Image (cartoon, rainbow, N blue to C red; front, side):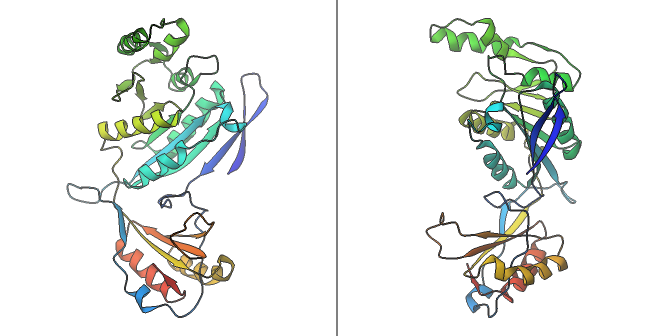
Length: 316
């Protein structure tokens, strides 16, 4: 990550955190920035004759080459940046989109500041392009620091207004609990004007969508359910070309692998080659380093795998 600054509402310099995720580099975990890794001699015969590269997701096409899809995530909340709460929505979204062939190209963390939220939203929006999508997480509750709806509305030049269907659902929800629909709670029904609303079974919370921006709560259970609702309602937005990957394991450490793998990476710049040391969280595999090759070109994945196996003693 890198720190970036922006002026807040009172003109002071406030920090935000930017995490850049390279396209197509996620393989069930956050990558450590695509570093080539390898070296070793004498691959085993079993490793040479493994199965075909794994398809992360097979997207249907109606002829021609399918357009690549991009997405971004803006995580909002002081509580994330001061360490009070740990974010788990990023890894969930990254895995989910990757498995559908969608590249999560940027994630940023910002404070509950309208200026920062609007600024970083528009920045991510530009990165994902006109066919891409931006997810936001957090800041849509009933308290004073929940400013996400207003901030996004301001970024797109519209106002927020009470959304009648949301109010009706809230009346049913809170009424069943004997609770009053207070002005504070009604703030959660004031959505950016012109938003499409996607409903998720089992919750009254609206998923407001404006300018291909999907506004979600930060609560992980709700976030995950509502992301799945978005994928179901807008499959064309969240279906990208097939991603192929191949995973290998070696008992050689990263420091001893770097030189050879760098050479392979230089020869194949369109392949994402990642290396991940064993941190003890994978008890079913006895290895020192995991190597992953990812590309939308199946033949390229096979070629790179063969070169790695020619330089590393590894297994699957």
